[in-house]
Amino acid sequence: MADDPSTAASTGTFTVKRGLADMLRGGVIMDVVDAEQAKIAEDAGAVAVMALERVPADIRRDGGVARMSDPALIEGIQAAVTVPVMAKARIGHFAEAQVLAALGVDFVDESEVLTPADEAHHIDKWAFTVPFVCGATNLGEALRRISEGAAMIRSKGEAGTGNIVEAVRHLRSILGDIRRLTQADPAELYGWAKDLRAPIGLVRDVASTGRLPVPLFCAGGIATPADASLVMQLGAEAVFVGSGIFKSDDPARRARAIVEATAHFADAALVAKVSTGLGEAMPGAEIATLDVKLAERGW
Amino acid sequence: MTIGVLALQGDVREHVAALADLGEVARPVRVPADLDGIDGIVLPGGESTTLSMLLASSGVGDALGDALAAGLPAFGTCAGLILLATDVRDGRPDQRSFGAIELTVRRNGYGRQAESFECTLSVPAVGDDPVPAVFIRAPVIEAVGPDVDVLAELPAAPGSTGGARPVVCRQGPVLVAAHHPELTGDRRLHRLFVELVKEHRETRR
Image (cartoon, rainbow over all chains, first blue to last red; front, side, top):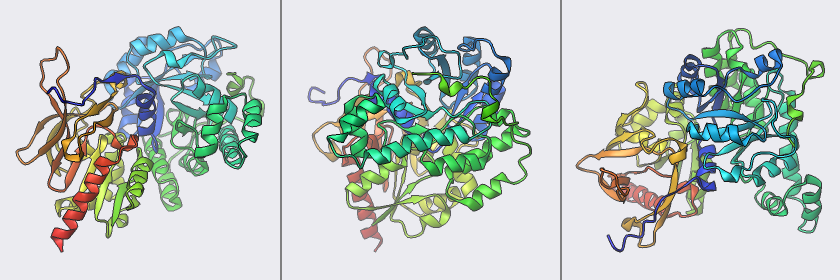
């Protein structure tokens, strides 16, 4: 049709990247190390899976350099499930990210759980068609990652500990500063931008909307349905569960219980019901006893 | 009018905002009782496998199935379209299909996220100006039943063997879009749904 106003399709736009993050809201993204775990996660209602060789608790235990997973492992998981598949690249390691994009992963996590590859620069995420999620401990860090092109922000928490305290600290810091920012007058926003070390345009955007320009998810330390309810009530829009599922007694049941608790986070009776008789959660760790704090990685 | 928005998972907030922009009361639906007294329901984008599981566990699936069978107007976008269709390919065997609109759909039929795209569509039913459309791991509508009106289609891709693909369809009081009108500021498809709901209410009086 000559008068057809339809235009050609554009892929990899920010709207398209952010759109996938929006579709995952209210859901649970689960770490899986093989196709079998991926299927358990999908059966339990995961909105996406994170394909990796070792869950954070094992990375922490093993030490050494943690890198991108073997492509064979990622492809095996892609073949096993219909939900989106995410995978991790090291901070600043844009070549790993290029490999993950070539494999067709749906989201790249530029993650502090892996050993950083660059001590000054994160990946230029605008250069990619695939969307990125990055961790943040405070509002400035979140806005710097968004300025680099991240389409989703997650709290860092302290991965592999089963201890929710750091994720709560990070969410409260980010969301508390957003609330304070909405009260600032226009002249004060320049001071905020300077203190946050973040672009004034993004600071103004947050001040006027009262939210980040991309979804804010929670990661790092979620082990129980009540943990998921807690962070959702604090203002997270979805949750990542790393070691918390497959390091527990009954992964299938716990995974499903966390999905239910995330969807119905304000319904305490439902959270009580799904929390009943779940067996042992993953073993936890006190933050003060840790040799390495993953949340301190990233700049 | 009160229009429910299925609020188990997905981009619920954007649909609530679109309905509010049109002056309608949007009610999040999480349990069967939330369906009482609604004039229509929106099924948002999200993951259809997750939504299926939560529809079953919450009891909303059976109650909503009954309401749809009794003629409740519905608007499904992306995952919501998959839930409303009669026939789903590449889904899970336990996936919920309300069968409210006679469509054969293929999940993620356009491909993975790398193939997700935005474009504009010609939708004559809502006006002459092009409608912005965002397709995220979208379902492909492979076949439509005889009573389904195709309101918009994507032209065949250059060099592809397939023909144009339907992307916005209507059958009676059920409207579906393979894309996400809620992610754009364009409210015309939501307005069309609100009109369908009004029409349906008046014919029921």
